[in-house]
Amino acid sequence: MDAAENDPDTLLRRAGQGDAQAQAEVYAASQQRLRQMVLVRMDQRLRARIDPSDVVQEAFMEAFQQLPEYLVEQPLPFYPWLRQIAWNRLVDLHRRHLMARKRSVNREEHLPELADASVAALAERLASPGTSPSGQMTRQEVRARVRAALLQLKESDRELLLLRYVEQLSTSEISAVLGIREGAVKVRHFRALERLRGLLDDLQPEGGS
Image (tube, rainbow, N blue to C red):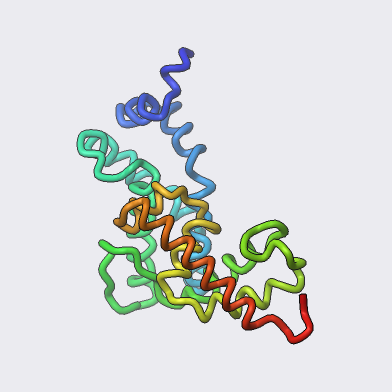
């Protein structure tokens, strides 16, 4: 197959035309990141009832149905658009199964009862060797300290770090998800890391390194 047939825009166009192979390739390219998002956002009580992979598959099914219309307007880059579909489905599931208070799904918001799962995932990621801001500490030392520091951060800072380090979104993707300029994402990312470093310093045991 010609390489041009596999460039992202052409692949999406083919998928929107119902090409099963193109849809499979689009699914393979985004499935892992989307499942990670669902995993860290899904309430443990809901996970006992619904497989996160089912949420991902349903989101892709809906996305492929809407893809022809999306390709005309392209209101967001593809992955943030796909993620928004999965996000909306996840919010609806929380409302329906856990009777959560109604929330708008037009903004990036935390789902109910997700602090523990998301903070734990973020602490684990930031505690990895060589990952800023904890590169000078061993993973075993820093995991609990990072978790404690994250819980003291503003929710907006924690959310941005979650998008960057756990969901592994690019600057442009975070910009699309949060509805802010890429420059603002970079500034907020830098400031969030600085605040986290400061909190980690405050939590450093006396005489520690």
